[in-house]
Length: 303
Length: 242
Ligand SMILES: Nc1ncnc2c1ncn2[C@@H]1O[C@H](COP(=O)(O)OP(=O)(O)OP(=O)(O)O)[C@@H](O)[C@H]1O
Ligand SMILES: [Mg+2]
Picture 1 (cartoon, each protein chain N blue to C red):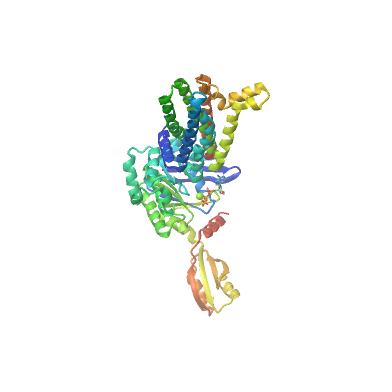
Picture 2 (cartoon, chains in turn yellow, brown; picture 1 turned 135 degrees about the horizontal axis):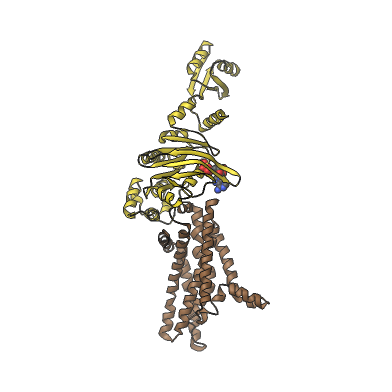
């Protein structure tokens, strides 16, 4: 269980995390979604007891991150953004070291089990320096899980690895969510949707939305974007035609067509209108909203 | 013992035995002391009796250069590789991390020291060396080495760059060592005396190295270690505020 209450972090005068509050419950995967510099890593560092918050509080499994730091650290498994490794150790030695440091009772059995879990058993005697990036990521995961922590915090675990491994890591995270409280960060919206039970969207240190992917999606549905390409109409005529539709907020030219932003689903109307005006509709498709769009949308609406 | 110290200690010891640098240092140290011993032995045939404090006295200078090499990696690498973040989020105190590392360096140094016992055994076999002097010199250089390693560890915590760490600690150790000969380069006698009291060598060359075991010298080296390790711990802790 992670309870975060008005957590704030200042680096000098720079406000990196600004009064964020959210919760994560056992058996739940919560995604921290935000662009670069949003404050994801900073938040996680406060939760793992690496750095103290400037203001506000956070409790992990009932323990305050500041007052009971050691108790918190005992209960957290953490995979930092850049997997920290000791290049000169073997895979097994590395994981065993963390197991012992975190007070695992029977390190040998636990290490074997966790290496099996991340499919590194056949590499147990390989030197860490010789592992590929994807394997290192798995090693990082092994290290985070070796003491079987109730809370697992993963900082962008899918960054920089190939698509096949990305899928594996996502599955692993989903799987972890069955028994642990998982907080993981990403800047990829679709990943958050796929993996998380709940998403916390954060930008410039502030939470701008949180909820299940479904609720967020319906919230976002208001801002539907369409790509429309029309044959026969010139740039201006086409734009004018589309703007006239009710529900359309803006029309911008893009490539040979237009990007239409609308409050409601106007696909039917667009098709109707274009054909009725005597033009031919070449293309009409929803534009996948990028994270940027969503931020613009959410931040814009907040004003 | 602080929880986690042992685990840190053994990992670092393992690193020494897996690291070419550590073997090179051992090799260089044994080579130099071997040459020195050999020439002293030659001398002893004609000029003067062999000096059982010879090797320890040489190590006093050698550690100015070897201690930084033995410790430069310890914390600099952790912060560069990012493993420090994991160490600082493990359920162990910062003190345990620093002490574990320090003890492993001292342990490795102790092994090197034990290797040089070979020379003492040779002496023992062919002459009647002053055993008391040998024992006191070895105790002295053991403590002295611990103090230099603590200084090296401090500089390793200050930077991510091993070379910079080694360079800085060599400079500081050299200054501390030079304090011993302050009398020869400083005109003011009182000032020279104070400098000498502060210097690493001043508590060795005229006490342990001549067979004198004094509490104040032991306290001096112990004090250096404690102070250095305390500052190092504070510096490690400061990573939490950066
Ligand atoms: N040690 C630091 N000192 C000063 N500023 C920092 C420090 N660490 C982070 N920041 C700043 O705080 C803000 C939040 O950074 P943070 O690393 O938490 O973002 P993030 O969401 O993890 O980004 P990314 O996706 O790039 O990893 C950024 O503006 C960053 O420049
Ligand atoms: Mg980050």
